[in-house]
Length: 121
Image (cartoon, rainbow, N blue to C red):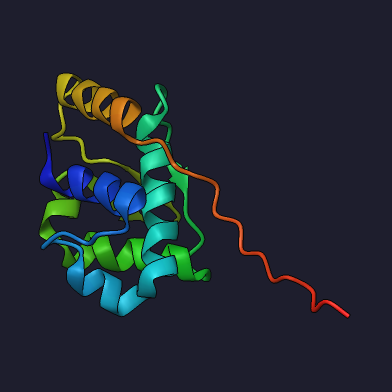
């Protein structure tokens, strides 16, 4: 299994950045990195793996472009070109299946709701 996939799952599930993601947590912030991780893992979990549309004008899209350019472990399996993220051609179908099965088994995101209580009168 690719370490970057394991760390993305770990980050969403336990909010702990591994060695590969520490710098990205600093750059993107906790909620920014979580948003990117949820997007990537949600896409990896789907069986079709059509390219994911990426908006380079949006913060998340910019983060995906930067990770694909600067994080070798991310770029080994995924590429972000123009307005799409997809598996690199070098990633075999068996490896894609292994990644998908790992994500399906271990990625169980919890809904994040931010609640601001009203003051009691």
